Structures are given as C-alpha cells and as structure tokens.
Image (cartoon, rainbow over all chains, first blue to last red; front, side, top):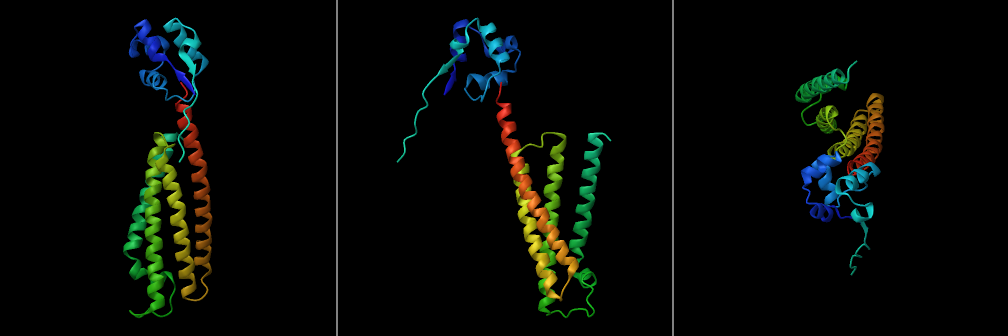
Length: 73
Length: 152
C-alpha cells in the first residue's frame, strides 16, 4: 500500500494543518483525509501543491509498504 | 421549468397522493363492495370478502409506505440524493411492490376473473423489477461517488 508521510514532512517544516491547507489550496478536511491515509487517490495538482508548500520531492511524501497479510484460521 | 419548482411540484403531488391514499385506506371497509362491483352486499362472515378486504388493506398500506419512502427520497433531491438510505428505500419499495402484486392476484381470484386487478398486479411486478434493478444501479453510483470524494 502507498503511505502518505505528510505528518512527517509537516513536523520537519513546522507547518500546521490549517496553514498547509491554505498554502495548498485545499480544505483542512481534505488535507486531514490525506494525512490519515484515508484517501483513495491524489491528483498531480494536489501533489504538486504539497511539494511546493513543503519544499520536498514526491518521494518524501509517498512511500510504498507491503500490505500486512491477515492471519487466516 | 426550474429544478427547484419541479421539486416543489413533485413534493406537493406526493403529499396529495398520501392524503388521498390515507382517506382511501380509512374508508376501504365501506367502499370495497362498490369498487369490486359486487352484485350482492357481502354478509359479515363471508370468507371470500374477508380475504379480499385483507388483500386490499395490505395493498393500500403497502402503497402508503411506498409513498412515504418516495417522499423521503424526493426531499433529498434538492441536496445530495446519492446516499445509501435511498438505495435501501428503492430496494424496500421493490419488495413491497412484490407483496402488493401478490395481494392483487389473490384479490383478483376471489370473485371470479377480474382482469383489471390482474393488470394492476402485473404492473406492480413490473414496477418492483424496475425498482430493484434501479436500486442496484444506484448503489454503484453511490460507491463511485464515495470513492470520488476520497480523491484529493
């Protein structure tokens, strides 16, 4: 699965949710969805805005992790 | 015609139908012999008449429940109609229509061959099928909308 490490970058750049949402031009609610990995997809324009606001690369924000397999009885 | 005006007219029509349906339900006991065009007024213990009366009561109650669900669905038209509750309503409306059609067929069989009741029953089956198919389509639409809302 793809993890969005928005909280890590926000902590590094010392940016709050409201501030980052304003800089990215999206609502705090949508930013929260991204931050909590609840989103199904992200537009390139949103990713572009995030990288611009956080002064980072897409790879700093997106990380691929192996999905944990559910234990089956 | 503006969308809002259309919604208002639709709601007004639904409320009128609800009112008329309630009146019909309450006066069914007296009006049924005339509706069924019975030559002789039925005696109190007449089983055929009792079954017919029950079928009509159940059918009318079903129709009222249908109208209430339709009214609730119509109210969501001005806001967001793509909600799971509307999918449930459409599905339930389909099942209620099937029940109503069974009542119609049973009532049609009680006093000899009643073609009008048979036609009404068949129309109810058609409406039930339509409602069930549309509820499945609507469910897909709700799923796509929910997924689309999570695209940031």
